[in-house]
Length: 253
Image 1 (cartoon, rainbow, N blue to C red):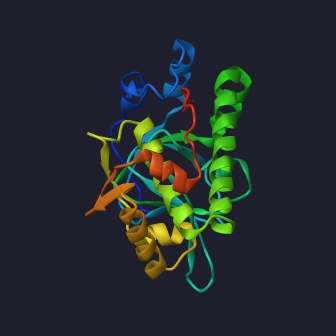
Image 2: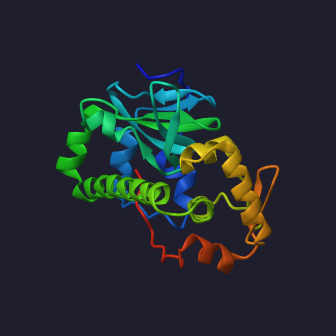
């Protein structure tokens, strides 16, 4: 299989019927027909090590992927090496759709942790759209959600204060992790560094560090040795300017 980056096949594949993501109540149930089609469409599982960009800007892709486990991030690089992280990909998120449907990728995707990806050939997308409109709608929904995430990040970088954008990002990532069962006893071991946050927030590393200290001093969060917890949600939401959203079961492929 021709895969971008240094990913390697798992040599085995998790049956869709036994997919651990199906236990997440935040993700919608498949019908028997949908589950059968996705199982047939899935061609492999790919294991990618941290630090490997398995999709690269300027390349096309014969595959699209669903994150089965682990974290990744989407990013763009300037010629001088400056990096802007567009957003993060967590389990159940789809990556590579742009490179499958457009001429080429407009951004890169790097594994933040050891990551396992479900692999779907681009050639089978037309069959999905023509035979199962419910799954076609799901892919459209996922693409629209990706646009929404980037919209929020642009709003943060453009208009939110440093404290507001930091609070919003941490609250947002905590909620996304909670959806897919990554929160344990009210906390999570975030896999990213302050440099990753700085590159997402459009701030210097020094400014990010000072802002995190201010946020911790508000007693809204506790973050030590990457173990993160929300200690006062009302305060964090007030700083972020986010009053919380109603969650409903969302699709994944």
